[in-house]
Structure formats: structure tokens, C-alpha cells
Length: 343
Image (tube, rainbow, N blue to C red; front, side, top):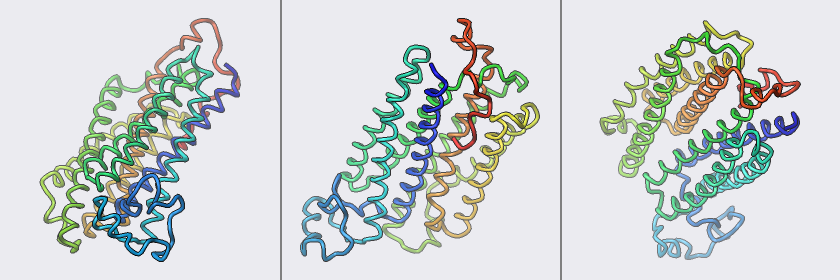
């Protein structure tokens, strides 16, 4: 395995991960602006491959046409149409990026086969995600389908991060992670599970908001009508905050600032604090639509950073990989700084 092939896969994988996070943000904007039915059909948009920009480009009876298909509330809005269509275009771009990531992973199939298998799984998952997107539209934006669509996006980005980190195991191994407390890995695992639970509760709160918004457009009254899950979600954030800050504190004390894991820990602290601040703003300002997609996006980034730190710990505790045990040296010319928080 040459250094250039490993580096190419790393850069392509990081680019793909960044693109998926962009899509998560755009998808949040689609939901927050109510643009999910901006294109009431799939894969075309109002029967066209390039969406219309004015109602004059549609048949005079287009509302009746879509009412007959089960979309009685379809109403053309060019802004919402293009927000939804942009979401679809970025989804196609990600599919292409993951396809090339999968192709690039073939070089690992002998010495590091898990990288290849993870990349293939990510490609299959993104194809399924595209099909699921069509089902979301067909279900007329059923809340449960939207939540499933979001959770699958989290799985895809997690698998891609695992593939990239696995490809760098020779660089990461033996970096002195044993200085961290022995309880660090267990606490981190629990915190990752807690983060997923918090995200699921957040999607349930979001579903409740969608239901309330259909019958009451007075935002100042929405929080009062939210179910108990909202209070649990809000209180659980304190536990999330302090447990993550404990992890960051341990990394700050025991890991040199030159190590990538140190920088990811600082990023985790910033993301946690930012997410809670936005949650407070949403609570005090009656859930403004502008902040809703950022709240989910930051939560997704938190989970991704936690996975990255977990893998730094896992591979960093290893004294040598299989290739090293067979007498091979680590990848020439690479350093611990090869992986940056930009991932």
C-alpha cells in the first residue's frame, strides 16, 4: 500500500463526511422552513427535472393533479421548491462521492479489509437512503419516516468516519493513550449512547412541534403544548454537558496539545456548549425556525466527534497493527497530525 493511495482515500473520505454534514444541515433547513413538499413528486419536481421558478410554468390545474395523488395541500412556492430541490442535488453529489470513496477503498482489501467493507456498506446505505427519501415524499412527510431518514444519515456519517479512521490506524497506533484513566473508554461509550438517546428525543420533540404547528401558528404557545418528552430532553442536556466536559478535561490533562485527539476534545467542548446555548435560545424565543436546523446539525457533529475520539483511543492504545507485527514500518512520511479536526 503506497502512501499516496492512503492519503487519497483519507482526503476523499473527509470530503465525503463534510458533504454529508452539509446535507444534514440542508435537510434541517428543509424541515424548519416547511419545504418538504416543495417538490411533491420524486425524482422529478412538479413533473420536471429542472424545477419551475414561477406558477405560470405549471398546468393551470396542477393543484387538482397533485390532490388526486394524495397531496391536497400542495401549493407552489418557488423558494420552498428550490430549497427541497437543493437538498436532493446535494444528496446526489454525496452518492457520487461515496461511490468514489468505495472505489478508492479497494486498495485496502488485502491488508486492511475492514476499510473496504465499511466503504461498501456506506455506499449501500446511501442508495437505500435515496430510496427512503422517495418514501418520505410518498408518505406526505410522515414524521416517523422523516426521523428514520435522519437517523440513517447519522449511521452513514458514522460508518464513513470509521472507514477513514481505520485507514489511519498505523499512524494513530502507539500514541500514548494509556495515560488516560481506565474508565475513560467506558464513560465515552456511555456518553455516545446518551447522545444518540438525546437526538432521538429531540426528533420526537420536533415531531410534536410539527403536529402543534399545523393547528396553531402562535409560536409563543407551542412550548406550553409540548409533551413530557420535551422536559426530559431539556433536563437530559445537563447530564450530557457535564459528562462530555469530564471527557474533555481528562484529554486536556493527559494528552499533549500536539495530538489530534486533543484538538477534537476542544472541538467537542465547543460543540456541546454551542448546542445547549442554541437550545436555550429556542426555549426563550419560542422556537424560532432559523435555529432549529443548527440545533440538529450541532448534535450530529457532536456524535461524529465522539466517534472520532473513541477511535483515536482504540487505535492509539494499540502498540502495533497487523502490518507492523509482520515487520513492516508505519506509513512513511505520515505524522499524527495527518488527521485534523476538519474531518
